[in-house]
Length: 456
Ligand code: URP
Ligand code: ZN
Ligand code: ZN
Image 1: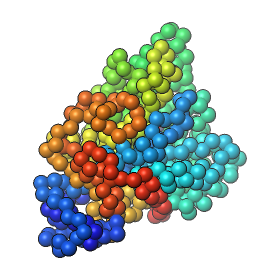
Image 2: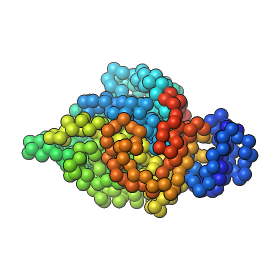
Image 3: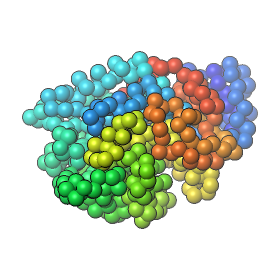
Image 4: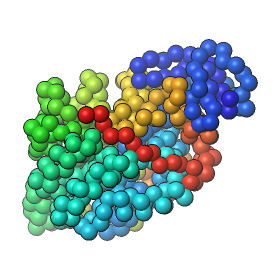
């Protein structure tokens, strides 16, 4: 036995119980009372929670976007992940016209092999079908373990949007292959119209980022995406859900049995659109933007009622000087915020305060993303699974500040947020990668996850 974690409270998606947990060769080999202490290393977790590592199914590391490249390299972003209890990330490389999926993914894998501090998978964003060749390539990509693909229904001017026909073709092909289509749902024409009008009127502050893409702009595209999924009976995963009306459409579709999955992010559970009125409002600019209190409340209700499937971060940070490009024109602010290090601690704090249960957090942040996206070795503390483990101290107080984060970004929208309870250790396949405030892993130790297609 390589590692024995003794006397912790093991938390799964369905139950919590005090037990020992044994690890050998990176796998969980036993869970039970008074396990043999013949281990190379013994960790006393008395009074602590022992949780599966989180899976952040939505990151954008080193992504060319908004006239620059997102601030975290794969090394910095996965280092931050490990320090926030995330042991797997799903990154989103973006395919452009003329590029193949596997050409793109393989080039990213070369970088990740050297830099990744946690395990990784990729959803590939498809922006152009290359005269249909991409539809043929999907099968090869699925065979290589890329079993989910993203469509932007937005970013039209940026050349990243897919039209409805492309979305439908991808949904149908993905369904045949046991793959998933992920969708960023906002209506680009409404956004462009609003932006044009605001700029003409000299309305240029970050507040107009929100007003150019408010609730109804997201809701229209959510409803359209769900409509397609329902009528084509093809699975769809709506990323970063942020509005009540769109969420309600998803809930109705789910209740009718449509294969609709919903992700939201901590920023939509914590902040309202009022942040865009702040002096530093541009730092909060992401798309979709934070919405009103009604949407925030609806998201929490949907979590409690089981209608949200996953929590992810949409980690896509930009440095302050880049955010400042939009000081006098919100359209020049690169869209995105840091979050990979904050997701698990934030959701666990919500459990610690009694808002939701710890089991629910494990379900949303680990078990469900593993299940939905075919990571069969991840997502649960059970025998045979990877020993991706977080030890959590329910009594440790922590105040988030850029100075105690491990990203390369020079600011955080979570600055000053007080959390009760915090991860104290993270293990990746049985190896310690985070220890009480310090990253102690090695870049390159993260491994590619070859995912399984969905059962048909
Ligand atoms: O503002 C965001 N979300 N930036 C990253 C790209 C995306 O839309 O997910
Ligand atoms: Zn998006
Ligand atoms: Zn994103």
